[in-house]
Length: 220
Image 1 (cartoon, one colour):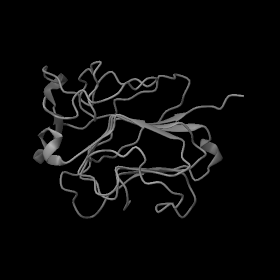
Image 2: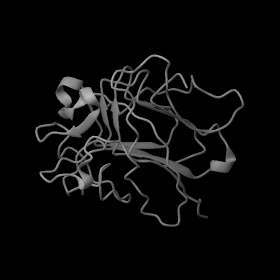
Image 3: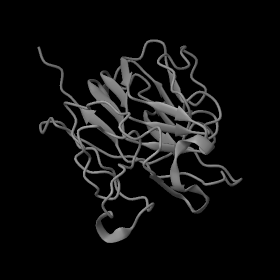
Image 4: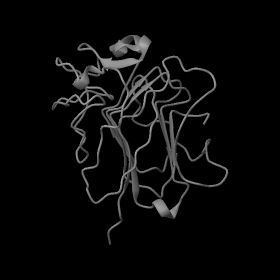
């Protein structure tokens, strides 16, 4: 898929009406053509919170003008300023002096008690997939991507997870808006995709920590 780091479009598909995407506690590193791109008005209540974008080429957030979207706690940085432990070997865990430390917001009603490695998150959430801690992470597998760390607080919702990654600097609260859809599929289907290219992307893609599709039934 030659395009943004994460691309989602409901294509006005009635089967996903009332569902939501929640992009929470993700780290994007060296992603081209933008970080998160979202189109469609059939799905509702999308959120983007505590995402770290580092050296993203293009806008970190590309949100269609009519998309039901809210965002908070996102951070866009240059690689030299991000405060990663060892990005040259793909270790994007944070050091104590990183600007992402304690820079996040509360994500209620969603819950993410641990980071990508199983490190507990404290009340002052760090931005991105990793939480800085003085303690060694469980299993001492620092910098190793794993499963998502965000779950839905609403137990009645169906959920599914995706993967992707990127990074960036200061996230715009508006993003790139508009109705033009540069990545729509020819068959008219809806869904979410992650980019890949034949050429290497430097550090490459780091698996998304918290992408959820929350299917919420509309209430009368």
